[in-house]
Length: 324
Image (cartoon, rainbow, N blue to C red; front, side, top):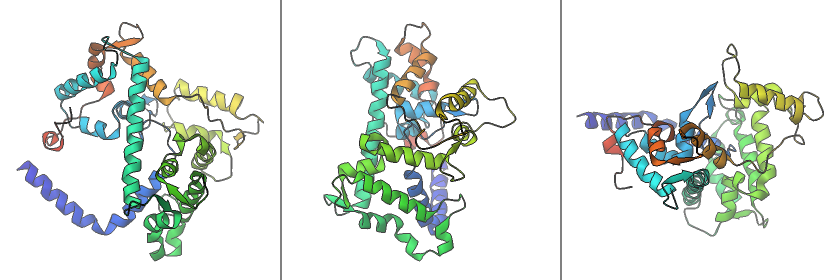
């Protein structure tokens, strides 16, 4: 009965939302254009509190993390144990930082490959060797032909569709290495995930600065810099890491001491490894005997850190139990 009621509810919602679908698709496209070199779309810290959902997605990948959310604690522990066996490549009974890092990188690369494949098929239904800008623009921004000029300028969040298209075009041209005005699947990968390509570094820096620069004055104030990382209540005391970032901004990032960070001062550390940092964090939180490596028992003891568990009534019906 519950399942029938659930499906009826889904049908009702679909009918009520049908007229909003096109606009929602455009919003999804806008979100996909935002640079994100993190391992998860979740904030790692919500205010001064650590957000475990970041760790779940970094360790499992976004889709697998969603599936784990449907499991009971007992099911989570059972499946996590099977994952631990996969991570322990040398089968010595321990998960090292390097093995954990490799696993996180594997999940990140798997996500990129799958995302590119899905979007390539969606935007290139004829499966041609390359995709032109005009073809891509027609699919992604063709809806703009039927919109009023006022609606094109910005939505309720102040995001301009025209600006998004110009930003896409700029990124497209950077990804187009042979300058033939079309992208191969490899070039399309650089377009969708520029953070993964060395030759796209400048566009990553530029777009990141544009996202942080809320007043569009071409430079980053300390409030914009901190506000991009920390969403805490202004009345609560800032955590130590936020205070440290303020010192970093004032003492190192703002080199000319004018109170702002401009494009030339923006630092993209080439040696910062998100996967390694996350692996180190997970070991720090779970390594009860402080030997810098994890046993299966230590990981299972902290299953909520690695995979979480939010069992639902419909979990059994929604999960594919043949995956493991």
